[in-house]
Length: 312
Image 1 (cartoon, helix red, strand yellow):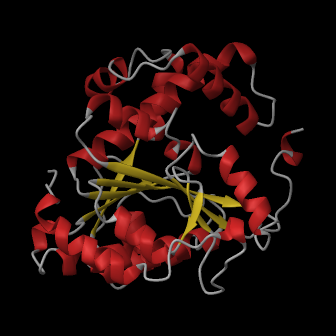
Image 2 (cartoon, rainbow, N blue to C red; image 1 turned 90 degrees about the vertical axis):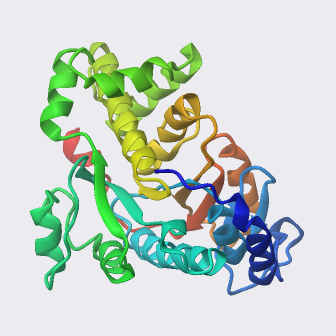
């Protein structure tokens, strides 16, 4: 399961220095390295280089990467980042196979399903339960193609749709025992519960029946617990989920930290922003996001139709 990476701390620190010779990048002072993507540590509220991010993430037992599901750029970035983190850990571990990330866990597959890659990427995924129509294939092709070429294992972490429906109908009573246990130890505060309910309503364009939101919240929490459980079972791992599951206060990180306080983890959310070329605007946005994750990676905004239009 989990691997103690502390014996490699010295080498990682050395590598971190090599990776971050030009970092941190102080965008607030308008010192910008053009080749660096707009990444902020939400702890220090300072821009950091991609190399610094890789070095810091590589020290964690569980890395959680958020995404906007229909943003191809996010999937391309994730594919590259997974390979770069894996390469970093290989060097830091002296090439020992048991000291590198061997498991990628994704929301796009149900827990218990593992992908056996063959000549056809789409067929390999669908054989493991991936739904090309639901996930609008080939939107995620850059991600899964990179994983396939990395040699790392790919496993599902999510609830099945049937389990989700049962949990919704039973208001959480039908959740599997191991997930119930995790959630009992990770009770949300009243404020966090209200926040989760608001996010669910916002995610449904304000049209979800108010009296049904608690049931949907049960499904969301059970899904977070399932993702957390799989990430821990196969740690060291990289977990790829929608941004909402990557939030520190109401998502997977909250479940893991409440149940496994000794596990080191970090969450990275990927946020679209029209002001991607304006350092000051991004710094303001980073401050607003400071409690949601450990890092934020800003990307350009996609042109898309209003998803709420067809629901109104």
